[in-house]
Length: 181
Image (cartoon, rainbow, N blue to C red; front, side, top):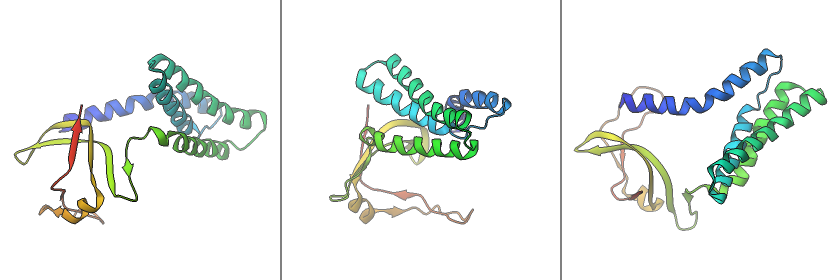
């Protein structure tokens, strides 16, 4: 299990390494860009959408770079040309990136709840359990059920441990559809 956690940390941290290096150089030049996360979000969404729609990884990567650079250009223009406050402008760029990706990314999110019927579906990752013990990590699976059925049949485990302010036992949902490629 520790190996899976460390592998995930390296895999997740590597994508942050490039912006960290870039932001380090930017701050050394005297500019503070708090909009890096917004640019990353815009780039990631653009890369995903263009990659899915065109079927080309390279076109998706190019679109991601262009979208991220376009949002970073907003920050650069406001700070360097208009003399705006670097911190405030960076925060605005981050919130703009969050808002734009939430708006345009909705159609590409394959999870959610139908508020009328209660049908529930989402992508998931976790651990395979065999014989009551964790066997191996699993990813890219889809779980689906109905929220009303899930809550009606929910079974709490007997493993509650009081460690922090809010604690919970393991929860068992007896019946749910699980699909994987």
